[in-house]
Image 1: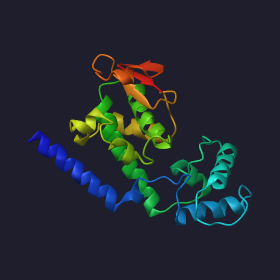
Image 2: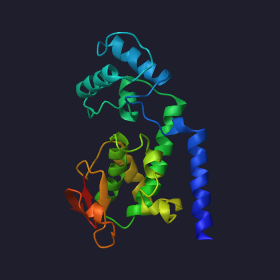
Image 3: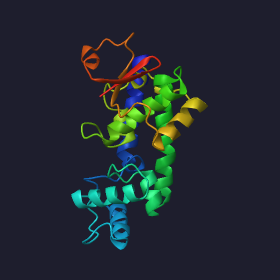
Length: 215
């Protein structure tokens, strides 16, 4: 029964990702489309970018976004996420839907992985997911990172399907707003239960509660 449930969940999420990929996507280097064109138009208008708005998020657009982010007190990662889009003034129903879905999905992952941890530890788990989204070695969406094969125990054992606690919803929002107690980690593990020797070889950044956070 458990195996059937997990298989069904995996199939269902695959269908969701195929039907609604835009819900979880970020505009970043390599992206194309109307949102990218809107970003470029605003940046050209304000003098951060030269040339034409071609709808292709290349190196020049990324550099312009970083300049805009530095000027406006944002993390200069070159990614046009929700906070950057809000500063630029681009809002839409899709953006709001994306934001709501990202909070919910990230909260479910945090709850499945760290609901017994301190609040800081919960935010740190959410931050690891977001750090992976930005990292070139991982999928470029929250859903893609979370449902990457074998990435999180809570997905494998079905705990992600439980309703998230209020604390985990708040932790997801704080992580999405830029708080990263992990110090930029892209991995974490519980040294008491971890059986993977490779993860234990990763450079440690810090420990929060039962989890070790590493590069």
